[in-house]
Structures are given as structure tokens and as C-alpha cells.
Image 1: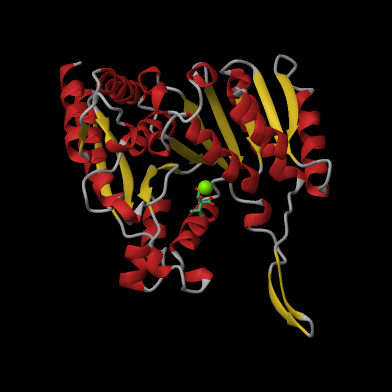
Image 2 (image 1 turned 45 degrees about the vertical axis):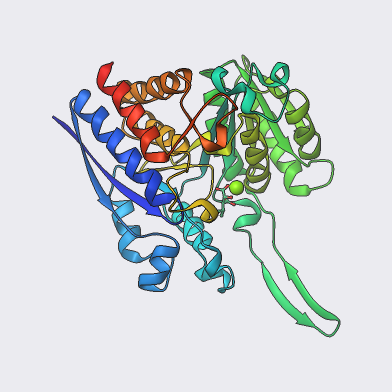
Length: 360
Ligand code: IPM
Ligand code: MG
């Protein structure tokens, strides 16, 4: 029997609740599809700061490196917002991404018909949305040097550097072009080439690569225009290719199109080695521990892990089908509930999905 070893990072806030539900579902689909899944749980984020004084310990990092895939719930805790940046939970996430060289972040946004009314945009605007944000994840202004804060005789100055090499642009562009080939053959690269040198190089490399992908319809948008187009006419997009900072902003905006950021999964991958699969949303400390969180983004992240990281396509499909069915049957968590649906708690919602999996 095939065996997979994954590391689970439940993290902070609602993380442990959505993890508990997701693991039950993972185990159910592994039984159904005849493979074994070994789950090693590790501390990460605020829970790790409490125990080890740092968000990503060497122990957790080594376990992740040795695994077949890493499944993360969410990290972040306002009580640590005042710590020096290097000790904050978010820094642990950046260190994990860069230590595993996870340069490609894939964030699909697909409107589920049963949930169209949960979107803050008009139904006719969102009805055909099915897009993929491909965000560069280990470079750009998040990691650029020099950076820092200096005291001058005129006061303080702080600075970061937005930097990309041609190699970094090429490798993320290639991922996006390949994905476009497997979808609707459309790619839009988002930059700020009218102002930034780094974006000019970005655009030059994407144009160069477009020559090798003649079947792909390539367009370019400045990020400010793209932000507007996303709310005006989001169905014009298929694959969106963009840098780390622009991708961070654009992917949250795109997420809202689907109704709730609680719905969206993501995959961060490398050309080899384990990938990291996590919901786009954060740890939602305001609702933690109340059993009202929406577990869908994490459940769908587990499906992405099965498909991309562990090559268990059928198990991934089982999960996606079950989520669709439960939503079509009218079950909702409170963030996506409407006036006619009775909101279920996180656990109860998970039970409904389990029931469907066991019956298909
Ligand atoms: C995301 C998050 C992270 C990011 C934070 C938590 C560091 O916003 O994954 O989009 O900025 O990349
Ligand atoms: Mg973000």
C-alpha cells in the first residue's frame, strides 16, 4: 500500500479547529482510496513562540523538509504583534517558504454556484469566475536587500528593496505558462512597468517567454488597473502571473469575489521537494475557539496537497465533490450563510462532508 508522510502545522487561532476537521476528512479519503497517510503534528507560529521563543523551530523545519508535503492551517496572534519582526509568527511563515524554496504560490478562485449570493459583487459579474493567481513567493520586496531602518540627523528612515533577477522571473513565469496551457490558454501578467525598473525587467522576461508559448494569449496590466479590473470584470482572467507583493494584495481581492476568504485554498511549490498547502485566510483570532470557523479553505488545501503534492488525484476529487455536494445541499458556516440557511459549526460542517465521502 502506498504511504505518504505529511507534517501538519495547526498553528494559531482557528487553526487547530479547522485542522481537526480536515484530518478526519484526509483519513477518510485515504482509507477509501487505499493509501496510508502518516501525520506528524508540529508547532508553528505563536504556539511555537510560546514554547521555543521562535515561530519556526529547527525541529519543525527539519520535519517539514523530510516530509512528502506540509499542511498548514493558519498562524498569527495579536499578542505577539509588538515583538521584534524576526520573532513574529509571520516571520516563521516567510522563513518556511524560503527554506523550502517555495517560489510558486498558486491560489485558485472559483465561484461555486451555490454560493454566488455570498459575494459582495453582483451575481452577473462573478458568475463565470474561474481564475488562478500565480504569485512569486520567495523574492521581491518581501526578501530584498538592503532593508532596514536608520536614524539620520533629520529623523528615521526605513526602506525595503523590490528586486528580481531574470532567473527568478523566468522560473515563476514558466509555472504560470504551463498552468495556462492546462487551462483556458490565457495569461495576464501584472506589474508596474510604467514606474518600476524591476517591473520593466519582469515584463521583458514574460514577453520573452511568451514567444515560446505561441498558443497562450498573453496580456499585461499595471497593478492599479488590474485591481480595478478584478472587481469590474473578473471573468476576463484565467491565469494571473505576478510578483510577491502584488500577488499578496491581488489574491486577497480576488478571494473576496468568491464570497468568503474562508473558501480559498493555496499551494506553494518548488520544482522538487515538499510543497506547503494552506488556506489563504489567516488565524481569525476574533472567532477562535467558538467552533464557528469555515473549514472549507483548509479542506480544499488538503485536496490540493493530495493532487499536486502526493499525486492522489482520486482522493482530491472525492474531497472537492463532497464539499460541492454539502454546499449544494444548503449547509453553510456562518460566514457564508444567508437568510434561509441555518449556520453549522465547524465540526458539524466537517461531519456533513465526512458523511458524503463515506457514501460516494
Ligand atoms: C499571505 C499572507 C502572508 C503574506 C503573511 C501572513 C506573511 O498575507 O500568505 O498572503 O504576506 O504572504
Ligand atoms: Mg496575504
